[in-house]
Image (cartoon, rainbow, N blue to C red):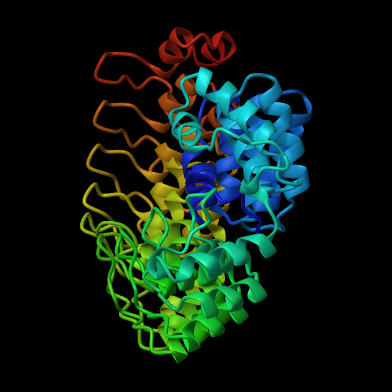
Length: 498
């Protein structure tokens, strides 16, 4: 059950966006760890990402501790563990990580992984604010002056309901706890406090009450997944298609969280599946953005328009191909999305799957007839993109279906050159065996051998030399493979190539 302190910023059901993964990139992790975490998340392997972060977190890396806490707190792709999230958030905060200090303050404020503790919350928020954390500064500005543990701000729901009843005759449209900035009906709906909601609705049935983001009680209950509260609110006259400040409906918020039961209730109550928010997105946009296959299935099953974007002009299937699991991609294609769909730059769903290093999506797309021979405006095939992105497993799937082995990009780079640059010795061997032109050169005059030598990929160099690559070729700057190896400090390779 969600717990709240009654403060506007801390209690907004969207406060977790502060900790969303999209905002977590930052310094503190070495490049290999960054790549490993990114690859795991793109492949939908959230438990694997958490394991990588935990290894670094246990060694004392504050950024890893913070990211691990955020992942555990969000429950994205793995079971949420708020107590473990609190421990790791505290570990990073105690070492001076300002984002972790802010996150820890919010957790104490809202009672996530621990009992609510406004005094500790203020302490950590002040530390974050001292480092210039703008959100911490704003939250502190809105906190009441008294935050002792027995303060009314965290008082029981019995007194809250009583005060709401007393206030209803004077101001029915704004029934609010005098000691908080979030109206009790909204807080109770978000928490799933059915008895409190029922009592509050007896005091007032005004559904115009909204939070700082413009969310009404039904939107909060749907976002949090409290079905019984939703039923009560709908039966009392809540508008199912009411919008917040961003034009988002309860259906969109529930879709973004992948909450299928609330979605079903809203649709049954007449919610419009194709209503658009201020950015032109619909509920299915939110479901795809979160890679929630069951939500996509439900919304699409009620006739949702699949031509809407996820963000900007990004098609649904292309986002799913880049970041979602097989089930989400499968559902979209089953419901009519074109497996060979392309974006404005002619990048196909397979191209996006390759760029996202998404093996699951690549398998589904190929099985559904997606064409691996479609190049984008830059001349990149999905095979080339997979090799360039370092996705050898995706490249292996695409190579088995691709006939244009030597197709070059606008800069003259071929799949063989991409494999050499990425250090993929086995893929290099396979491409050569499939008939790739071994001495093909790009616009700079560099061959696969030159690229491998410059990058220091000894195994790739070995494969290419064994296959007969010409070590005497010169690029436009009159450099040979040995010269490039020497200039890059790969003396051993340079000696082999002389």
